[in-house]
Length: 240
Length: 115
Image 1 (cartoon, chains in turn orange, yellow):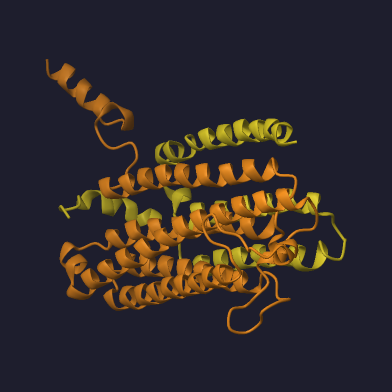
Image 2: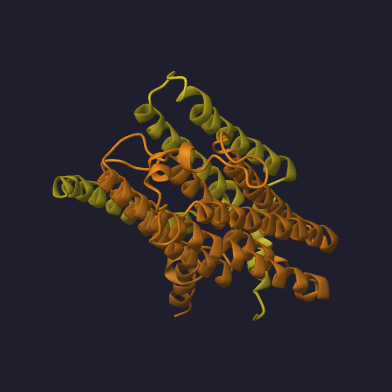
């Protein structure tokens, strides 16, 4: 009898037989991963729809023609400079986020707070840049289902195609651009809010009492995901 | 905000030490370097005609996937997780590839509809 029991116990110690977690991550962290996976599907659907519409269009507005201003400094002739700055800000804030996670592993409350504050500042800077970029496109006449009414202005964004094709493509571009960067910007905004809440928790000592800064890791996953999505948005809207 | 099992943390601790501050900055410079290469291609090489636009596009996509790998593997720490979790996250990505294939095919049909 005792031999049988010990045999069952032995079976239960292997990862996939219920003895212990095969993933070896805390519940909340695993759920964050699964949420991010679902979010990856949402963003993929948006970006793949964009790709399909663009593939099937005979003409498409050139990225170097649409995005060639640095709001407040240069109106024309500086393609991709501003978005380069935005990309740099977001990668930088991702780095400060990992540094916060790293400080959390050493239970260094001071450093966690410092790096979290840098991350939040980075998030706000990115959102500010995006607001400027949206404002600039809006001032040119682009908005959801709205394109420049002046056909001469519209022509400048294209290298060919009939006026009807240009108008259709410009409409699709405007809708897709504002929807996808808007959805991404909304994620950045939520990320900043979550980061602020977590930083307040760090300040009041919630995680110090708990003995672990695992929560920083979970919001960190979300923040890196936002950066990850931007890498794809950047490539497909600004480079390709 | 329930109590988190401390047992899990202890096991994890050893693995987390693999992501040191030095390594974090190394990954940052890799990401920055790849982005710089993308900019050189977009702002210098394509306008000067050194490489045609239709060659540049696949290059951008490969570089983007490389950046995505560095973010997910190192910043999101997936490289140091259990293989079960890695597969649970990566295998569903196949569905995304499926959607890409389906919609690329579909868009070729749309071209005919538009003409």
